[in-house]
Every structure is written in C-alpha cells, then in structure tokens.
Length: 301
Image (cartoon, rainbow, N blue to C red; front, top):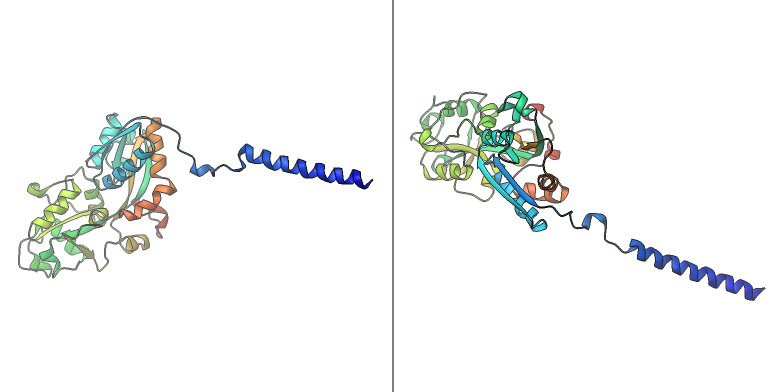
C-alpha cells in the first residue's frame, strides 16, 4: 500500500513538471505585448501647413521611420491655411494647423476632414534684445497698440527711444490667428510686408537681427534659442507652467487633419505620434501635453 502511494506521488510530480514545461513552450517566456515590433507598413506620407507644429512632426517622423524603413515622409510648412487647403483638395495626406479647420475652410469642406488633436502650443511675444533691456512686460492694451501701429516708438511703452519694427505673418497663418484672438483682442494686425513671413525660424532670425523688432512665435522655437527675448503679457510670462495653469492665455491646440479614411501608413504615423511612448518627447520639444491643462477652455479647441 505504501509503495502504491509513492508511485502516485511520483506520477503527480512528473505531471506537474510536464505542465510547467508545456506552459513555457506555449508562451510563458514571451516578452510583454507592448514590446513587440509594430506591424509593418510602407508607402509615402505627405504633409504641409503650420510652421509652429513642424518641429514636432519632423521629430516624430524621424523616430517613426526608424521603425518603418519602408515609409517615406515629406513635410513642408506654408501656414495653417495652406495645409488645410491642400489636405482638403487631396494634394497632401496631412494638413497641420494651429486652428480648427472650420476657421479656414468652408463648413462643407471642413466637415469632410478628420481632426487629430496633437498637443498644446504656446505663442510667445518676442523682441530684439536691445528692447528687452527695458521692456520686460506689456499690457494687453499696449501690445494691441503696437501691433495695430497706434504706438510706433518704444519710448511710448517704457522702452528705448527708437522706432518699433513689426515682424508680421501672412493672413494664412494659424499662429497669427491665435495671437490676434488671445493677445490683441481680435484687432486687425498691421502688416509689415518687408518682413512678413510664416517661417517661424526666419521670423525669430528677423527679430534678432533688426533693432527695435517685435514679433511672436511658437514656444518650441525658443527652447534652444537665446538670440531674442520673450515679453510677458500683463506680468505673466509665456511658459508651459503658466499655460497649464490658465494664467497665460495665448495658446491653442495643434491639429493634424486628414481625410476620414487615411491610408495605412498615415494611420500608423498618427497612432505613433499620439502614443504614450512618443508623448514623452512633446514637452522636451517645448509643446504642452493636452492632459495637463488645468483649465478646460472650449474656445481654444
């Protein structure tokens, strides 16, 4: 009887060992699902529009192409209006915009596009460093008077005795639309055609090189650039922290618009740029993470 019980115990032990080995052979030792290689995609992706969003989209494209070597991505600026027009007429796959499509396109065309809200973009007022020595902050009214050319000399707002040089953006610019709406109360901005550009990098360069110059630019263009100085509005500096808290109001959501059924490569790219993995890069590049906004303001949508 004792011998019989020993054989039973031995059989149970052997069976248990076989079950463990079987489990290992069926995937018990595999890596977690989220470390698997992404599904292979191929093809061409084209995009145009917002120069404010361009650094982030370019950065994401470079990372994405390391995982998907069969995908080519071509990106251009040109302004939010241009990007929305081109994605609407089918000449590009993605239209990058600082503003909702309905603000630049007829409703019937805007309704045919799919909105992918990417991040938060803060717009900063910048000045030449000779101005920054005396002008650290401007009231909203002073800023409005400057950009509508009612005030034309810095001495009128506490600065040096020198002319104000506006570095402006074209009307197709989404950054211009955001600045007009939230910084200067919807006033019509005066245009300086000689220095007008929707290339954010060139705008920063123009402000840095022209004495008495003032302009505005997306915060990401200032993260590694100290050639110009930022100006506070009513004492509030243009920082991500102040944007998140609601203290600083000159900001907007960044959008990538596509048609309702984007091709596989475009969908894979959008999934990547919106992933938690890539999300870590957003603040490093100077953009804001939408989920960190403490004040929900539908006017900014």
